[in-house]
Image (tube, rainbow over all chains, first blue to last red):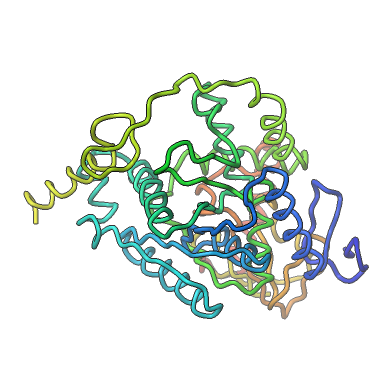
Length: 304
Length: 100
């Protein structure tokens, strides 16, 4: 298979685009796709400083690499979740990436900051680890981005992530969630930072290809808590369709953004206020983050 | 040929004969949309021919790894597909001496 641009040996085939590219032209393709998204969806403006949430995985490290290559001012944010060896490896990969490139990185350890690990938090609340982990990460990312003085928070959600979320929301007709699914979430409160997903049009396979071809050493092993997650089931189902009908993922997602989403109104519009304890944005007197972490600390007091 | 599979658990297989990347992925029962095949520093497209003395890595491209025991394309196409797939997998496992 030959590169569409230069006729050299291709390394990545993009069946949905009827194209294949060599290393350099593929990396160029990814950079242009991200730049196009940044511009089309007005994700970043001149003068913006960006907190990039980095887990140590292929998507977030690649995103940091791309934004840095495009000349944006970035700060990395890594959250240590206390999930055994997986978290240790994630930190090692992230630190090595930042050090090699001389990029600023903030590390927040949930055990040091809030007194417990994610597994303890899940046990204390009798909830799935992914649920309390997601809630905690969203809170910490927003807070850390604001405290760092940055204007935008960028996450490495790729097309497959967005399609899996969309699929799940359609399957259960979660119209409220559908209305809020977007590549850009504006800052609707002084204590909420603008959130963007610059990789939302690139597939997971494209991002893994990018990371490998750029020599990015990312954590390949899965989070032990992800095993059996619904999102993975949805990804499997969607990829069964994609392999037989290339381009389905992109059509499904872009069709949603262009045709359905403009018709949806967020029916759950609520009054935002500040949590009486931590001062972060919530809809109640006390935010969910404070409540769930209280339970974790209580559990540790009872069972040290 | 030495095949290192990280999908999601790490395992190593040894197999004989020349085949294409597409054949290898099919024989492993994996969805080509969810994996990358790597030789040295290079990513391989599905038409590349693999040789006996190659060492390749088949790596999951899906975060967290695909679900274990997930349905493959061949399986979705019916029992005949499943039979062929199992034969191919057994063949690879037999050649690997049951190491996987």
